[in-house]
Image (cartoon, rainbow, N blue to C red):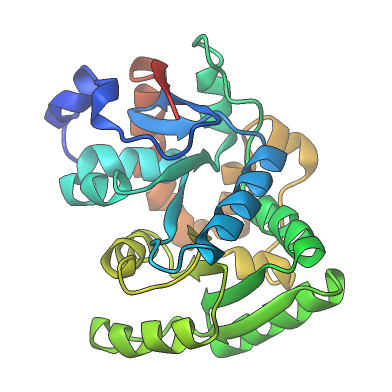
Length: 279
């Protein structure tokens, strides 16, 4: 892990002008060096509906990139300039981690609540079923992807999942995959390819894809089908879901959390402040 002194200048003295407005109905707060939307889960879902309906009326409009901020992303953005540049291409960055919500309370513009993607995909499915929005699910294994689609359809009657595809492909396949996705005419494309690949895929293919939203969703398909378990609510509320996951998968996650958590905590404490620019 690189020394903290490597942090780029914008993390030392972030400037609001560097972040372009994504919407006129909310503000951003700088959390751990990342401009994060001050939105509740309900507001985020309603914004999805609004943006998708607007895109249907303008077929030339490119999808909005909707990325998630958590401790892993915050630490990676500080250590890796390429990832930071990719992350900053987002139109909306929402607070996937409870720690970001806690840190925002040190500012004048606190984030109202956590919008974990594993929860938000259900909020989004509910409103999509009510208003006829169409989903495309990209990522995970073929079996997990197919089961996630079946589970969402069963849980939210009327939800239109117009296409899906597993996440095992190379960059050379992406143009054809984008053509395949566009043929289904989705409103929301869920991209579950793990970090940082899902962010890179979204930025690389934004101009190719036709949809209202392009949303990164990590491993949420595994949670939808029950293959991965959520932490008890009290651990989620206390910002300890990472600890629950570590207990579940110590071999895979020990070094990830050992290397990223200390830096993420440092950034949350020292690179969090209000942004006055309205979005």
